[in-house]
Length: 489
Ligand code: ADP
Image (cartoon, rainbow, N blue to C red; front, side):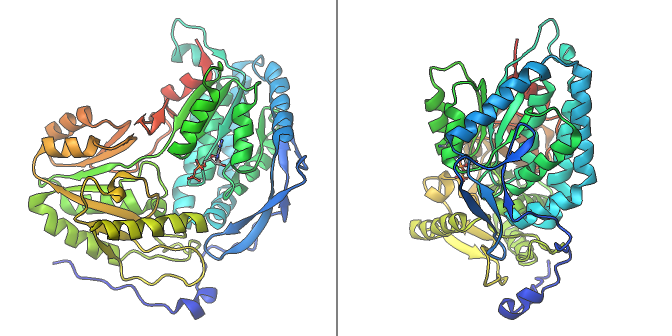
C-alpha cells in the first residue's frame, strides 16, 4: 500500500519571504524599462506608453514594457521588409551560421534566461532550466541545420522564402514559443516581426539583446511588445506575408477572419483538451506519473495538457487512489525553489478564470478533490485539483481551463473511449497507457489529435511536428513539417 506523505506545513504568511529561494535573482541584470527592438536597435515606442510586467509569485512589479501601436508595427514591418532583400539573398550556409550562433548564445546564457522566465511567468525553475531553455536552444540548432539543406527537404521543388513573417506568441512557454517561430522562419530566408504575450515579454526582449550580440543583420528579427491591439496591428498590416499565431481559439478565429481574402499564409496553434487514457493492462504507477506530468506540468498552462483523464472502470478506484496519494506529495509554491513542482498561475486574470471553472464544475455536479497542500498568501496560486465523476457534457470537460485541473471519467470499452475522447471541439493531443502495442496502433489511428503519446506524455523534440485538428488550429511546427509554412514551392 502506498504510504500517504504529507507535505510539511509552512506558515506562508511569515515564512514566505524567508523561504529558501535556491536560485538567487540578484545577479540577474534587468532594466527598469524596455523599449521596442526594431531594425537592430532598442527604440522608444511611438505610443509613448509602457505597461508593467509582474512576478506572479510575489505580485511585485519587475519592469515596464513598451506598448507598440500601429505606427510602431509599421516601422518594424518596414525594417523587416528592407532586411528581407539582403537576408533572402545571402548564402544559405551563412544564414545557418547566424542561427547556430543564436543557439549557442542561448546555451551560454541559459541560466539567466531560466531565472527570468520563472520570475516573469511563474513556472518552476526546474522546468525553465531543464525543459524550456534547452529546448529553445535545440530548436535553433535543429533549424540551423536545415538552412543549407532545403533542397533535400523539398526534393525536386524550388523552395522560395515568403518575405516578412508576423509572429504572435502566448505566455505559457515564452522563449520556447519564440524559438519555435523564429528558427524555421530564418532558416527559410524570411524576416520576422514577433510579439510576445503581454504578461511574459522579458525573455523575448532578452533574446533581442542576444540577437544584437549575435551580429544578425539589422531588421531580420524585430521584437515588439504590447497586448491584443498590437497583435491585431501585426495581423492587419498589408505588407506581412505570413502570420504564425499560437494562443486562444477565440483570438485564432478572429485572426482567420481578419486575413480572409488576403494572400497572407496562416498557421494557427490554438487550444486543446487532451484525453489521457489508461487501460487496465497499463503499468499503473508509471501511468499515474504520466497523468500527473500531463496535467500539472507548467501549472496546466499547456495547450496539449492531458486535462481529461479516461480510466478503465475496473482499475478506476486504484488509479484514483494512487493519483490522490501522488498529488499530496506535490510541492506548490515558490517557483524559484528547485523543489517546487507547481509554481504560480501566470496572471491574476488567469487565476480568476481557473477559479471560475472550479465553481462551474461544482455547480455542474462533479465532485471536486484538491490536494491538502498550503498555498502562499501572496501571489497567484491554485491547488492541484481533480473533478471526479465528471460527465461528457460538463463545461469543465468540454472547455479548456488552462490550469492544474483534471477531470476524470471512466469507460468500459475501447469504442466508448474513442467516441468520448473525440467528442470535443479540440484535437491537439492525446495520451494512451497500455501494455499492448496493438491497442496503441488502433487508438493512434482513431484519435483525432495532432500528437498522440503512448506510455509517456508531454515529450517534445525539435524533430517532431506539432499541431492540431478542428478548433486546435492547423499547420505544423517542428520537424521537417515546420519548414513548410515558411516557403512557397
Ligand atoms: P490567452 O487568452 O491565453 O491570453 P490570447 O489568445 O489572448 O491567449 O493571447 C495570445 C497572444 O495573442 C498574445 O500575444 C496576445 O497579446 C495576442 N492577441 C490577443 N488578442 C489579439 C488580437 N485580437 N489579434 C492578434 N493578437 C492578439
